[in-house]
Image 1 (spheres, helix red, strand yellow):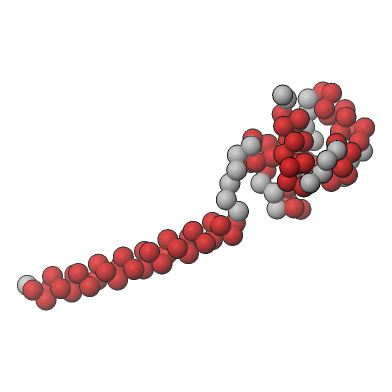
Image 2 (cartoon, one colour):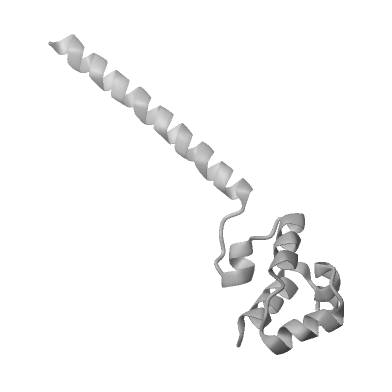
Length: 103
């Protein structure tokens, strides 16, 4: 399968669109333009990227099928890492106080 067809499948999956005409509407192009891209195997990069930006979809996923965590998931992970780091720093400080107190 060529890349434009893969992208169309992913757009349909994410948006709930069921037809190429619906995807063309999402990309704000005519269905004839979309059919032309499919025939040539070309990608309307600007339209796809605008669509990603407007809907907060991952361009990595649409173009390459690479799933990434959402921004919210990444923020939660960073907050968890920060809490762990603070706890570890606190434990290290306590251990150092014990060591210094024994010397």
